[in-house]
Each structure stands twice: as C-alpha cells, then as structure tokens.
Length: 389
Image 1 (tube, rainbow, N blue to C red):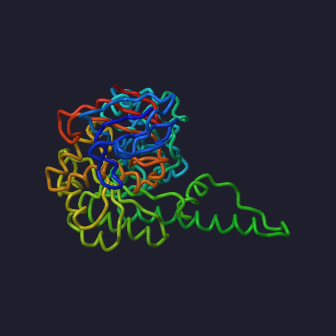
Image 2: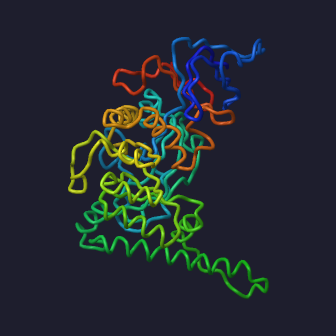
C-alpha cells in the first residue's frame, strides 16, 4: 500500500508538506515528497490522504497495560507480587491479558506500542516488555522481551512492607536490598564465567538461581534498569545505585525532576515523566507539576511522557503531551516525547518511534492536531496492517 498526498511528521528530519509513505509487508519501504513518489507501481493499493497528516504510532514508555485489568479488582490485579520484596525473575509478559479493553482503546488513540510490566510494590519488581497493542496472542505482539528491569524506591515499597512489619520499611533498607541482590548476582556471574572458562572442567557452576540469572543482563548493560522514583532524594539514590553497578538506567516518573533539572542534565539522565493531569494523591507528589517535562526538556534532556496506565486511561497519552505543551514544552518535542524519545529511551527505536525506511509500519493518521482534546485518529496501522479507519 502507498499512502499519498499527506503531510508527514516523521520525527527524524523535517516535516513533509505533501508526501507519501510506502508500506510493504510489515515495514516502511519508502517515504518522501510526492515528487519522489514511485509511479505506476503494480499490485500496490494507493490511498489518497489529502488534507490529513501521518505520524508514527504513539509509544507509551511506561505503563501496566494488560496487567491491571479494566473493571476488575483482585481478579484482574496481577501487577504486584507482595509476598517477596525481591522478584527480578518475574516476567510481566506472563500477566498480560491481551483481551483487556485497554488495548482497543489504545488503538483508538493511535497508541501502537506500550512498555508494560509489574508495579512498584517491590524494590526489585520484575521484567517489563515492549509490545504492540494489536493482536490476540501476546506472544505474537512482543516487540522486545524483556525490555527493562523494574526497580522501585520510596513510598510504595515502604508502605507495602510496613503493613507487614517486614523489611524494607525505610529508604535505607530498600537501597540495601537492591544492593545486596545486585552484588549477589555479580558474584554469581563471576562463578558462572569461572566454570565456563575452566578448560579442565574441575570448577562446578553455581546452583541455578532464577533471580541472579534475571539480573545478569542488567549488570551487563544489555537490559535497562527502570527506577520508579518521585522525590529528589529517591532520584539521586537511583543514580547512585546505577553508578555503583554501572547500570543503564531510566528514571521513571521523576516527579521532582524539575527541582533538580541542572543536576540531572549534568548526569545525562534518561527520563520518563508522568502521569500528568493527576491529583497529588500521596506525599511524594506534593511538588508535582505538569510543567515537569517542559522544564527537564529545556534543560537539554530528551524526555518521554507516559500515562502509567491504569493511573490514566491509555488514550490520554496524546492529551498528556498536549498538557506538557500548555505548560511550556515545545510542540515537536512533546510529540517526540510520545514517539521517538519514548522509543529511544526504551531501546526500541530500531523498530518504532519515527517514520523511516526499515522501521515497522506503525502509523497514525489525523485530520486535526493530535494534541487536542477533540482529535480522533482517522486511521491506524500496526505492522503494516490497517486496524482502525
């Protein structure tokens, strides 16, 4: 299929006033101005999108879609395994219900990729995955799995285990437990490699440890460490731990980031802000402001915006970006915060986040500005298939 006569906002490079996107199979085969559009291509359907604009499919960099299900209480709440504070071996993929109505609502809003996984009750909560929002069998929707290891600091682990009168009940204990498990995994890796490199075969490998195995890719910087953190002190603890173990880290929420923007810019931190448009429902959110993404972005940091679904409906992702614009963020930067920057921060920009030859043909078409409350996606494509419109 060739989409023609549309305005195109590729996110990489300049917008195209009137151009084409050529979809071949599941990928983007060509993109350019109408003067560059191939003529008389046999067997290709041509779709005229005059007066409409094509954007990359939107990417939510942090949520819990399919794990905290719509309209259910305990029956559909599979996000937090609160029987053990250290659960790196848990795979979010095993909890996702792809039949949940949130997937349909994501497509309605043009959200074609989500990074989803466990909640923040545990200091080490488990593995996130990046999935497409179209499909029935989650295994066939996977873009990357695992995509990140979830760590959590601050109130959520404190409150969870304070109710049980168990560790961790303080920020010190949260950090100590994370340190202990990472050091254990580091030694485990040393012992594994020692056995593998012993040509004599006399060194036995350590007894299999699922938690340590899950943390090895994190220690080797093959898997990103996503730190749930709101307060400035927790943000700095996330950075401290990451430096200590040389982790490729991302600050999730980063609610007080606007108070320490200069320090975060010096660190070159990767940040996912959100959810926006919420009340200050707990003490950690006292200093929350919808201007947070704008302030951090103006400090020179690429910032992604998330819904943290189910805190916000997944369809509020573009509206969240609109709120960031209202509070001072550049419009194109806000669009990149839910496309290119979100994909780059989550390490999936080789597949999604921009309209570029070779990337997945995930596209959303609007007649109106998508960063407005009245905008509705006209057409949505996932892996080259039109799934809306």
